[in-house]
Length: 209
Image 1: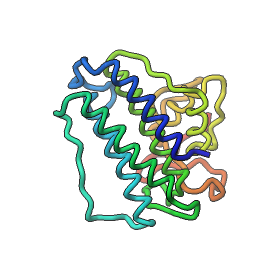
Image 2: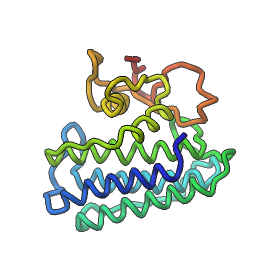
Image 3: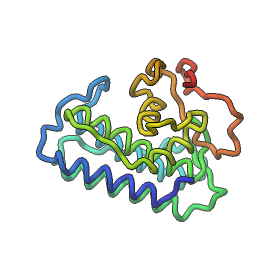
């Protein structure tokens, strides 16, 4: 099960990778996304903070909150912001009881769900940044497996769990399966999963590999 330590580990791993490209041009576009590398990093930081807020809000979808990470900051500041916001998410997960629930459009999530979503955001968007920079990103296998099992329990890890996680997030085609356009997480408690493959609101139904 994913937890606070996994969020911290994912953030540190992503930060170390991004630091190696801190002198590159982060205004370049990420293929297939309407974001620059800097925009992807900023978006990821914002997502981590949102997860902390949503879990702390106890299931309420707060309409009063607005925050934005600027993309014109120095690259190393963006990385530091990413780590700081991930640390906030990890801290809220750590002090939340298993019974805690928070709002998310794909399901009312428990602490492990928010931890897994934060990890997924960090890993997948670090990979997006890598693609924009012409680099290769590959996180630890055990961390990828934890996230895949928690958020996509219908996807078997196979021989390359990182490729499976990227496929599940709609990033690549895999094993003869088309790239997904209707992917969704199961972020609610695993015991609530009914065995079906979900689709996000407004998206087409995904297929299982």
